Image (cartoon, rainbow, N blue to C red; front, side):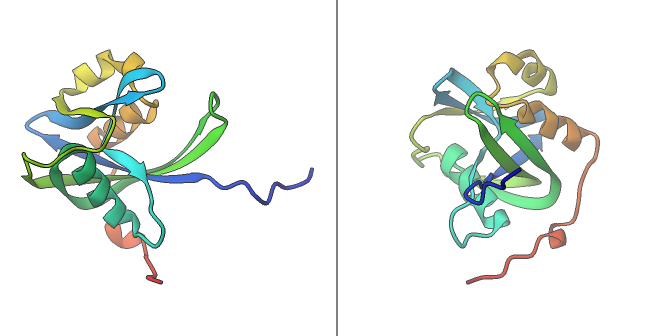
Length: 153
């Protein structure tokens, strides 16, 4: 079979933050209506994965995110879009909030939900990775950030 040399996965990052039993999610407008996701987004050119997670969390929630560990790397194929995503999910903590910051276009709000509220709203998740990343976090999956190496340009 001939190999498609133009195909590339979409590299994304996500922040998994738990505070006082609740997880930080983003409610956002999508082509399927208002859906929930972890603060997440695409890796920018020449950006490190860790820097992307910090940036995306700030842009989508106004919270400053400090990654402490890698939870996992997830290969997800969205059949409806025929698009493959390679997601790097980071555990961490929020260290501040800029209440006056404007959130990215399309973001409705940042929300703190319990694990049960997240499971109960699964039909409103952007992808199945929302629950999977939370469950992996709750299962204690943590890998050192030193696992990732970024060579600047």
